[in-house]
Length: 264
Ligand code: ARG
Image (cartoon, rainbow, N blue to C red; front, top):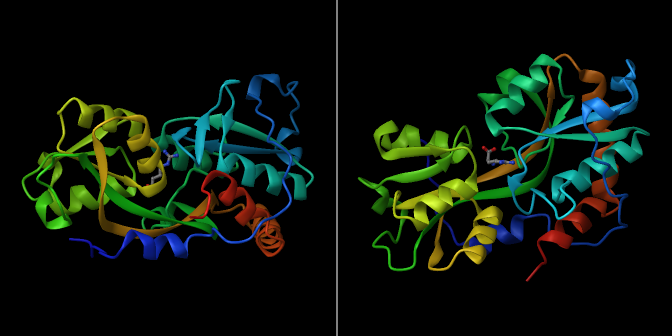
């Protein structure tokens, strides 16, 4: 069983990159592979990012039907620094690592947690944010802490660290996988699962959007988010890490995060 981290939510919030304020980067351009004019050299001037846009505020589909959020803006700022055009493809979370391995996308920004198993398949850039796995329950739930999960049905987004931890700790029988967090939360509202284990910021969004739910004041795990790049693409890795460092140093990244997650 993986080590569970229990601390106050407030503690981890202060660890997030919330401080500072930076210049606003250009909004990312959403394009599809079909409309890049069939340019066979697209890879060199286009940064093809993959994400799973059901993870607000890191990524979501906005009212213009475009992928927006922290990751889209950070990728937009990186692309701008590298003189590249950003192209975002929305896909299943499970498909992101295979897609970057296959070369159909160049980079993943998806609130993706740095994890040793994933690091065997892809290379992670430097981390740009912190995430916390939390537990969402109905307001009147008897689940009050991590220990109470024993024997309960846990909803998760398939292939996420929440899924991996819970399946490891409680076995497949106790864990129900959903295509995205919103569907897991819908199952919680319908009483099909007893709780949902998911990252704290999407959790807050889901709890706000659905009545009768709350987030427990215990943390299941604290994690680092980073972008993922193909193992052999060291050139892009170096460029992205260099751009990311500049964007951290000048406050752009903390500014983007704070725009979506205002410091309390
Ligand atoms: N941080 C978790 C993980 O890496 C969940 C990420 C889910 N992201 C998404 N865009 N749906 O497994």
